Amino acid sequence: MPSLYQDFARKARERFEAKREKRRTGEYRFTAHAEYKMKQYNLSEQKVRGVIRNPKRLEEGVVKNTVAVMQPVSLKRNPDGKEVWRQEIWVMYQQKAKSVPGGDPLENMLSTKQIRIISAWRYPGVSPKRNPVPEEILRELEGSETFEEND
Image 1 (cartoon, rainbow, N blue to C red):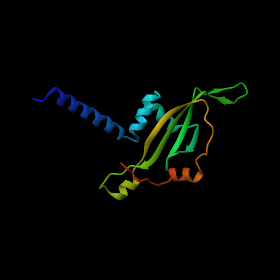
Image 2: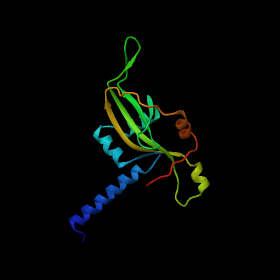
Image 3: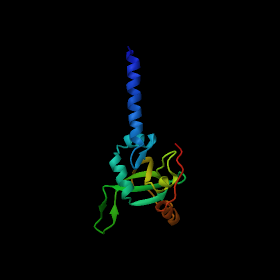
Image 4: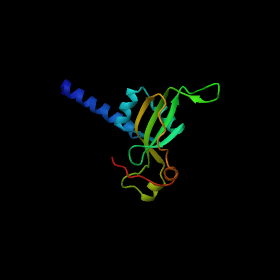
């Protein structure tokens, strides 16, 4: 008969594996860091996906082969027509192709894209514009370029 501790440890492992599997399924994959930051800034998965789908601004990420996207919170227009906001939501992600280890290489090349969300955060105020994403990187992301997965 298992002890209380063994039962507790087994349940904890099951919860950990279920959470880990949830991060690894679907079109979007969340890193543990991204999940931590989403809790810290009270951001839902749905909100993060919305920022990725409809960004107000795109910039090159600070990490190699990443993109940072921004969407303002509570966007309003001044009487003169200028858009203003007091807070932004930022998401940094990397786009890669799904691949099945040991699978057909041709099928892996034709598989759908997968987005790996690295981090998400709220920025108080309006962030200064940095270097926008160069056109060649945008074309590369839209093209069939794949990134190696380092899991």
